[in-house]
Image (tube, rainbow, N blue to C red):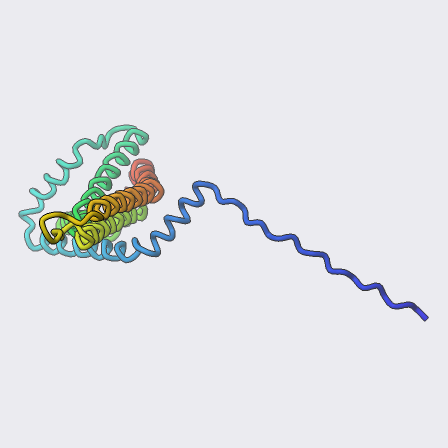
Length: 250
């Protein structure tokens, strides 16, 4: 009779060691978390501001065509530093610089606590698109086709960059307002009782100031990370497409 089969001892599975993340991968993971936690809601607000600006601009200039020339002259004056006749490389770099500068201003407007001033940027961009649509309509052009050829190729990258920069600026404005209110509530806006402050008051205020500095530094790091990792790459791609591809479609 055959003997009993030997028992097989299962081999131990070696523990799975997670691969260390690179710096860039970690930064984008943190950016994705910030998008889901904060920026996404403000991105939707910025998109609504862009749409509202377009509707208001289009309706206003369609009903007041005499104002189109003045508004267009103002827009062209703001774009006078862009060399339209330059080589594609020079044009792309100039467009990138121009749009990046505008986005920096939009984000920097967020340093005013609780004002949410960055939302004015997509509102103005939408109004400009509405102006161009109105001018094209009065000239008898096919507005949807014109926008499809002249705006959409680079706009699918540039407009998200504008909206993302706006969402970062709104987050900056609201967070600074929150930090300011916390500092005021925890002692910045209260006078100590009596003629002299309690012995621990000075240390308490110093600790609160140090904490505020840490929070502000962390906030500044988030803003810079978002701008460098998301806004600038999108603007660079948009500038290359606008300089090299969009002219071929007209």
